Image (tube, rainbow, N blue to C red):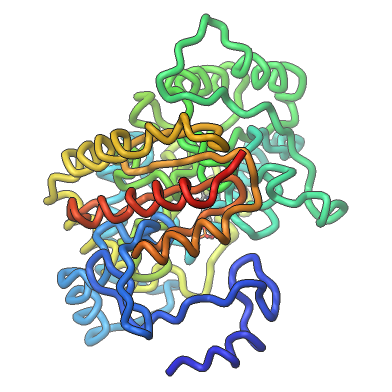
Length: 428
Ligand SMILES: *Cc1c(COP(=O)(O)O)cnc(C)c1O
């Protein structure tokens, strides 16, 4: 039996205190799209362990790949040494990502991949003898991670900047893009114009624009139009700043394209991936960049990208990532995403008329119910668990991003639980 009393007294859980206000559920095992609790209850997983487990849990091909790697070489330092899992994975990432992205840095978590992206941009401008270009421009409602650099470009309100004021570097925040993947706006749209205005005034000191293309994840689960992303590329070029896309949540198919920036048909100068990279098996992330950025950085003092985590390119994590990408590419993932999208749309959209529901939106394998109130998450979660689904709402957002290979009856359990929970719990 899991010693819950010990957990309660000694262990931090995400964004929580000790003891936590709501006890975590004890998990005994996972299986396919199911989480098996210690008391034997089976929950259909609607979270993919935060966007990561895109093939469900314990997938035999991923388990085998990891087991094989554990036998030959679980880990080896990456300084002065290299190995096949890393080289294979780099080749896959370079092949699959937008064409100009050719150089790969392996990081150990998404936040670190973002730190590396920011560092690359800073070092790039130092190399070009423009060290004054050291500020980042981003949009509100973004989320880029919990380390200090990543936090400094995360939404100032959601990201609790006031808590760390004085420690966090100050960057520029343009208004968030208007919501709506299908939104049609007259040109020039005011959201992109607001961002361009920042560049017009401050491009001399701006190193890069960083944002999550198409889907803003943890900062509000907001979807926005590809045209915005396209115009962003043009503006970044006009004002001579780098463009960083954080695809840590969106990468590997979640929105219906392998990478969300493909909706816009453009590519960034720097891109981060993580979360689904290993199919949720273990922690790994990567920062990709162009020849031009890497070349500039490497041909000027200090002639090195100044980063190198202890567990960089962990072979077991790379082996998991290689297996996960192979599995994804040989699956009919695009059909799967479309199928999930259609189901989420059909089942969740009618809730838009429910009192207390502010908005319902679906894109790819992401379904979001936005509520008017922000204090219902714990009750919604409890109700979903009672209905056999694992969902983890936060604030005003009740959402799901299931595994791509979820079965129809499992998907029905998820949306059924969401509908029941909203009907039971949500009042204006
Ligand atoms: C989750 C996330 C991160 C941070 O990744 P961690 O692995 O949690 O450090 C960064 N950016 C985006 C868009 C994310 O969704």
